[in-house]
Length: 146
Image 1 (cartoon, one colour):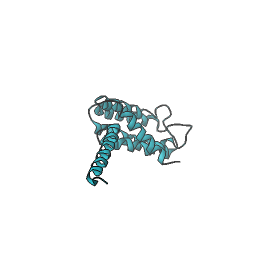
Image 2 (cartoon, helix red, strand yellow):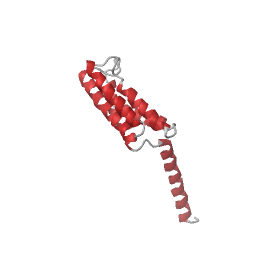
Image 3 (cartoon, rainbow, N blue to C red):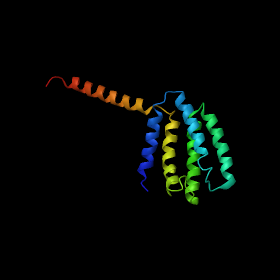
Image 4 (cartoon, rainbow, N blue to C red):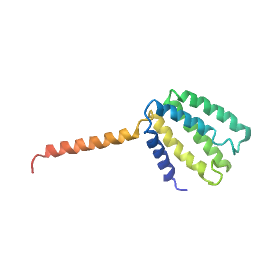
């Protein structure tokens, strides 16, 4: 399995979520983490134990409506659930054996972004470019005429 692809998927997820303005971004992500909690229900390998996990994730998602920290916790809980399913041989996508392992790699990327407060990565990239242009412009003026 390519270990870089799930990281890229996590970054793309965060970039796409950056298109949503706050506070809607946080609320939408709370809904997403709640949905992730139910991802294994139809084919879950842990039988009735899937239900308490869904309930836990619903609670975490509810708390995530007002807290990026809870959304990050939800993604880490989902990471642990993905690992358990991967080790049991019951992947999230039955037709792709390593799909749960991919989630194990991807979900912490999203969680880290959430623990940072779910900032707009688009705004971060714009700031980097404007700072680099400002630094280049200051450097050109400091060099003086040639």
